[in-house]
Image (cartoon, rainbow over all chains, first blue to last red; front, side, top):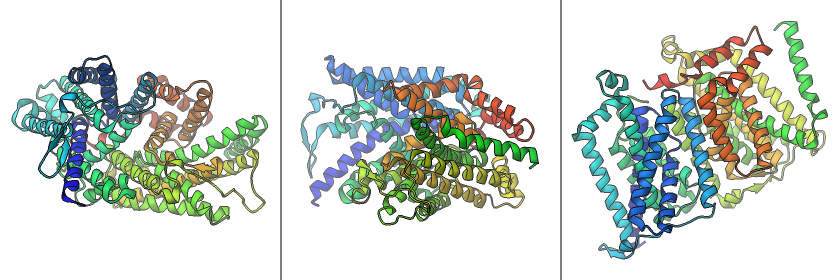
Length: 289
Length: 333
């Protein structure tokens, strides 16, 4: 393999990793803070990309469609949390039942409305060209996705470590009851975090549309990859999600090139190796085992 | 067990074995499917209800059992040999994965088993030369217990019925045994059992392995039943459905998961016959159960359960209902 193709694969892996990061970040924080395994998190990705597709078809252009889709998905997340999730906090089996059921419902509704044949979201025309990145020519759009992912990671890191909201979230991950006892309105925090997590997954869906394509079933595939990232990276930290996502994105992409017969299994091998060495994930805080 | 209790059991078994005479041919086939699913879901109910291990990767063991029959069936004909191979392969997979995962618990265990199941799925999916990949493969072997091939629907029903009864009574004995009681003790309070000197992980690993074996047997029967296996049998959505059947049927009971399996298999067959929207309807059922669960299927099953067995077993059923709300939640806090 020449250096230039290797560079191309690495960039592809990074772009994929960034898309996964956007989902895993929300999943990880929701899990860390509310102790919910949200099996419906892939749904936000799915709904995001299909809603954006419809807006693009209506002629709004890519960027307004992106914004609208994110707002709609965030609203969906908020409603879901307020109406349904609130009832199942602390009841693990009911959470599984509820979120699994929701993912079935939304996947089937999406299939109903948009059909089951794969669709593609076109690359926005402003970014539809190739950039020379030194070693290789690479689609500008994917560079853009990598850039957005890094910016988002930096922003979330800043928020987690330097702001009051971040302090509340960190405290909540460590001890919810204590946080509530200190007078923080934990219900609002939960709703907000759920909506933000949904919005991030929606963002990932829309940005991923031109790269990954769109079809019913991608929601569960991407959910499983994100869960692996959460396990690998450790619960409740943006940093863990970021490093984990890059690791998994690269492993998956390079695995496809070097070990095509083991493609999908590679990321699980990584997960098992990480668990053997660090049972709480790379950046887990050790409270959970 | 008192004589009257024996009588009741024998009566139930007799009724059960007479089922084919009131069912249509299609009904007999459906009943076989229900029984196979019931064995699978009971195996999952064992670790969820009695050991507190909520797994979302149990289809991996079911699928391994099915593929064992499909693949080895190309070389061997002996049904006993194939069933035992399925049992050993699934048990081995459960044992090895359990060695790694059993120390996790709660939602963490859920995610790790899910990922493990997906790994097995991915391997089977990608080994196209061997397994046929996404297209799946036909099962050549046909069941034969030594008295000629079992090729009628009725014959197959009795094969699955016997397998189901053996599994059920085996699990009953297991749960009532000192071993089963220790496992339940670990679910109730692991630190106390550790303090009492129990190697809690060993117990959990043992019960997880047994559960995997049983799932493998169910998978093997399914391969015979369906004459065709595909990677969908290992996909996490299938694990999820089994998990739902356990929850809907009743966590912490033995018969509950079997009822849950029957409920869903029959409903799916019925609804799929006139609409393609089964996933939507199934999803709505899940959500409705969560919203109105206290008056839903779990409650009804528990009430019926209590009515049929008023004295001895009403307590676990009640406990299961009472605990339904706060299941595994205590793990993290």
